[in-house]
Length: 271
Image (cartoon, rainbow, N blue to C red; front, side, top):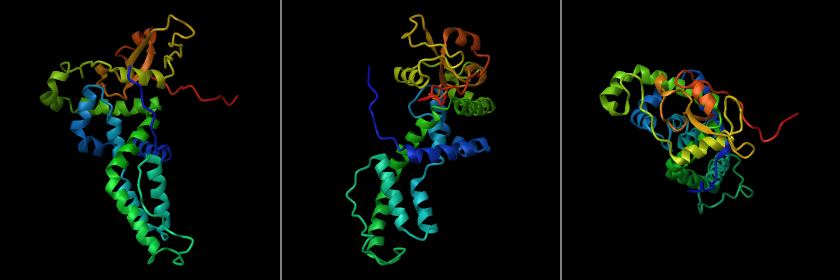
């Protein structure tokens, strides 16, 4: 079985992106990403992919080049831009051989016309050259945060299900072989990497009844991978639309409900 490699995650920046994305989602923002990435999203809904519909949603709030341009326009001290870019490059683990500005010997308070500014502009140019790679890494990191939030995933996929139902006639014209009549998407196979991700995210427990399915304590545990929003409710096979259930809860839930919950195993309890 392939191992998941350990990697740098830009979680400090990712928290801000995830927060901005969820705020806009619950304030009603949903149109642009469905238009801009429609074809890619539909492909993700047909069968599990590592780049999910949620990745495309997060991409709408991730533009490091524009963010730095806004900072340059709106702050007095361009030195702050240097510190910001340096932190971002460290977070995403991108190597560089950029020179360091010599702030200690600089007498230009806001670095408007000095050697420091010339150096900082090299940092800005480097970030602009790497912005696509950086944006992709920031989206990947932000996804790690929101993938932990099953309540958000539920609400996100309910919204997608409403879009699928609304767009169903046009989907039938282009993607009929992936659909079951008027009932929604066909079931797709679950890749091993997806099963592992869902199992470990949900800590080997049924997310509804909280029974232990790890077989460490009880060898009778049997786990099922469940669509949070069922296919027959215009749910999909996107990799972010799955959760871990026991056989009983999965059978009870079936295609009838979108039941989930926000219970998780904390790193420690406060009591």
